[in-house]
Image (cartoon, rainbow, N blue to C red; front, side, top):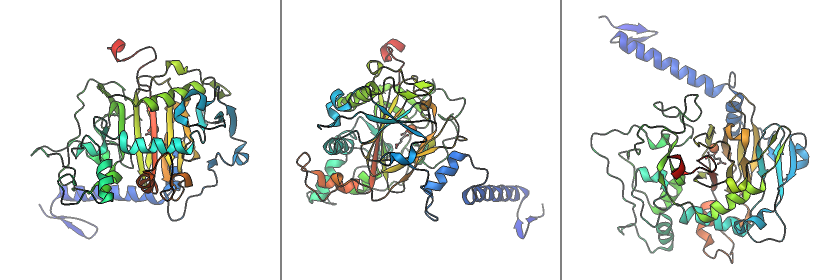
Length: 427
Ligand SMILES: O=C(O)CCC(=O)C(=O)O
Ligand SMILES: [Fe+2]
């Protein structure tokens, strides 16, 4: 067969030409979506705005709960049914009650409770999120590739910083998991969270119509990738992207391992129940949240660790059999822009500025709304989390403050089973 040509390129075969043309079309399509804002769903348009470095994002529509007067047309102040600090000690000791919350006129079901935790309570939660919760059996993104010691990584990082753990010590490098020869991973670690990647093709995703929260298919653990590097403890802690609490989550299929449930941290369960109790009967217009705090069980949680420039792409959390129960989400550390949209990406999302200590509660219709985090706002760490100061409640804060100087932590908690049902009664 004679070589075929396309423009000035010579091809050895027709097949090669076809491949080349397909690739060219794909590249052009990609270029189009990345350089022009035309034909983009409003949610994607907003994501691109906040991810842009040059030109800088347009922040003019951002809702800042410290400047309420600017948003009185879209935000309604409400009073929680009870003081959070009375309902749970995890919010911290403080004379002032915590009852101020806000709802958005155009996002039914969304409730924001700004500044819900005292500085000491935030320090305590951050310490737990970094040094206590990320221990086996709780799973993190690092587990796919590394054998995490029972202590977790944090004590190794502390020892490295103190100089008591040296690169030549055997514990310095957390061992890698062995790659089984000849097997290729169906999923890569990069695909296991809804970051700026296409979701894996083989499974329906939590945003697709054929998605089922319960599937009979096997849920194989992602396989370790060959070639992951051995890292120092300080590098390892900054590679932590997420951990899961309670029912463990299978990212590739976006369903829960209902047979893999680990103990849920009591303080997080306690504060979440308090939040769900405090938002009873809160809402606006057509939607008033009626879910009872007493019916809420914290059964699954995700802790997201964001470094500067990390983003979380727009998605819907609908892996829970119970989609009536509120989802409670806490922000700690650097501020972020949080986009809250509607049932599809075609609804124009509202950008919210979330600060350390803010709580977002997604109730009723908002449980099915698209949301995401397109921007971590640099240099927004509150002074009370700084690594330069001494704190009576946290004498060892320096290292935690170092970590938080470039990080945001989000903790979100869900109920998996319908109310009055549990693992035992459902099976
Ligand atoms: O980081 C956040 O505030 C949101 C996290 C989130 O939506 C998720 O983990 O599903
Ligand atoms: Fe989410």
